[in-house]
Image (cartoon, rainbow over the protein chains, first blue to last red):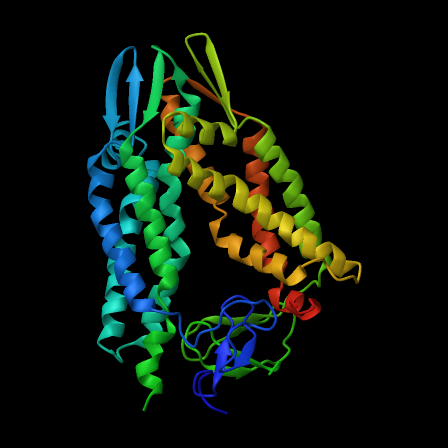
Length: 201
Length: 200
């Protein structure tokens, strides 16, 4: 038996995993478009990553929300939100928020960038570990959304005129875009590209 | 063709072999999960999906938290979070929260029920392949676990300002998370696809 589906002339359906002979355009079972590899995988990944990097800057500079108490407004960025949690002595929670909103997006951008670069060079180095790295970026990516949900809840909950009001800031739009862009970048990357240089000799 | 399976992460081909219940077949070269032998046929994911839909109704219809400050009280539902963002001109963020915390979990579960109930009754669901595909595509966009974490962070943050009281929907959400995980574990997409007629 040939080693890979591509060598055997088979296309793996990305949704239902039915194998079809090459030349078939749509999966006969679930009507999903079939390709030997995700189309334009690397250029899409690069484009989405580059956009995410650019938007990451305003996402951290602009406030994600403004807390107004007794007439005094206090803008909160992602990092100052973490700092406030630390100051209040809630460091376990501060750690969770820091990991979800700062560490995960950054690591995800760096990891996907590295993976795309390694595929671009046709690197044969540790394909198994690189595949696992990819799986991690896919699994944990959505936890960064925690800050977006947090703003949604706080804005709805704390709306009491002069006493206490929380309003969303433009930073949350940028931040949500970064999270979605990194999720889409991870999904457009095709881990099978990591293995292709090893299968082509 | 049916007895072959290709690793989705590295494209290596394997013969599909039946295993013991609870068995997991992994790709020998990249370690990705190829296939799981599920324990319980269609009835378990069906029962768990029914539990999910009931809990989802509670999560969406009842308030999550009540916030008390200076004699004023305010309760919020999930949808209120979406509406608040919309009111402040954050349409795109509101849409994202609507999709990931309300629509995706709800539609995912409804689509599963639409497919699993007829299959259990040995009938063909209407547009089965299309609806099941929708269920699979929506799954990664359902982020209730993340929503739960955000609510917990919100509670702790607000404790500094005033009183926060957890309400019905929050308890329902806490109950929902393990049930939703159990649906994923019990559902065998491979077996569902086998029972569905191909899309014309």
